[in-house]
Amino acid sequence: MTAPLLDVQDLSVEFHTDGGVVHAVSHADMSVPESGILGLVGESGSGKSVTSLAVLGLLGTRRARITSGRILFRGEDLLQKSPAELRALRGRHIGLVSQNALSALDPSFTIGAQLVEVLRRHQRLDRRTARARALESLQLVALPDAERRLRAYPHELSGGQRQRVVIALALACRPELLLADEPTTALDATVQKQILDLLLSLNAELGTAILVVTHDFGVVSHLCRTVTVMRRGRVLEAGTTERVLTAPEHPYTQALVKAVPRLRLGADERAVPRQQRRLPEFTEVLTAVEG
Ligand code: ADP
Ligand code: MG
Image 1 (cartoon, rainbow, N blue to C red):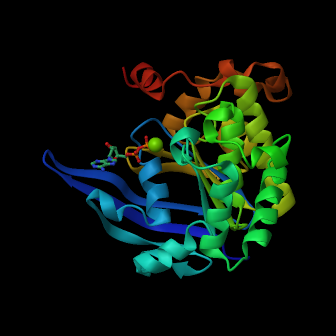
Image 2: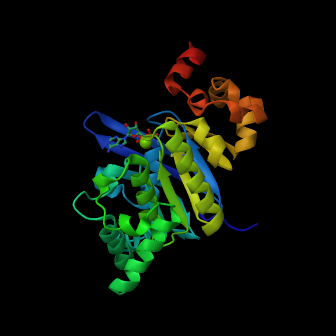
């Protein structure tokens, strides 16, 4: 058995706030295989984003304390790395796709300038080569008319196009792992599907592993091969997507899956509009289950 690309072991993260200690993540384990796609699912506040920020080494600024665990990336513990080492890793080996494409892009620079900047920050490239690689990146994410888009500013693009640019930026240096935190939540249904298909094709073409944070079982069933379910900072269940969606073991996961009945229809599932496969609110399910 080969070691996973990313292996989070026994991770605990707490925040010290004026209101007391918040146990955001408690002894969580999860792993992403080389070229795999893991879905990290759970209701709002379950510790998904805090886990992915820990992987990126971006918790330091947020009064967070990591009280246990290891985060092994290619066998090396990211928790032992210096801030400079983590900076070098981000973008180059671990790319980030955030939920809000607008906030990820700088409104005052062209798309081309932002791609060139990322490429030159991590790799010794002359301007001309960086420019050529920037164009390649836009072509990779199937942005039509890529040559012209290099000169465009973020506000000149649609929401879906901007999310493609954010993915192009994240993949510009060909990282081994992509962290995508709710990558399609801000997009309308048809564009969501296009972005998910793009992520699938990039995974197939480049072998980029993906850790996708989501509260949407539609995203999980479309994109992920394995799933880890979190609630209140703890991992409740993990397994292949097929097993978790068809034979969930934990009562909480069972309730979640039951709340999306069409997921169990297998082949018929594709005929069901995505909106109907999405959970309205995890908390509503909980109230129903826990009375
Ligand atoms: P999710 O992404 O699953 O919705 P988060 O990982 O963002 O949840 O948050 C997990 C828990 O940590 C929540 O209870 C949240 O309120 C808390 N939390 C996150 N960031 C901070 C912070 N900077 N200070 C205090 N508490 C935080
Ligand atoms: Mg979150």
